[in-house]
Amino acid sequence: MVRIRLMRMGTKKRPYYRVVVQDSRKPRNGTTIEEVGYYHPIDAEDKQVSLDANRIKYWINNGAQPSDTVKKLLNREKLSLN
Image 1 (cartoon, rainbow, N blue to C red):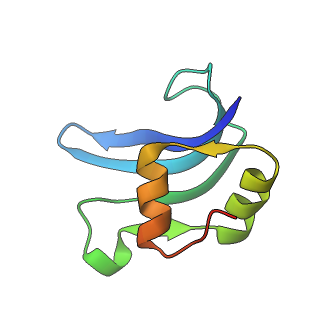
Image 2: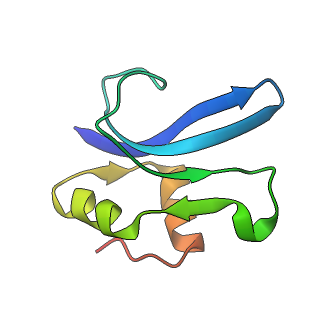
């Protein structure tokens, strides 16, 4: 199954995440199909999340399942999952 999930990057205690489309059987930082955004939890509130809405909708329409954390980010950015 294809999932939309976070890939951890950055250093110890200074994480940032890429929102990626990846096979669910791959490890968290393994090979990805596509990068569709990023999440920087340490940055200012207005700069924390950047998502490519068109590509996320494309992958969801083709059967990709977002992780719980990505669902929260999509709701926060007011992107519908349909």
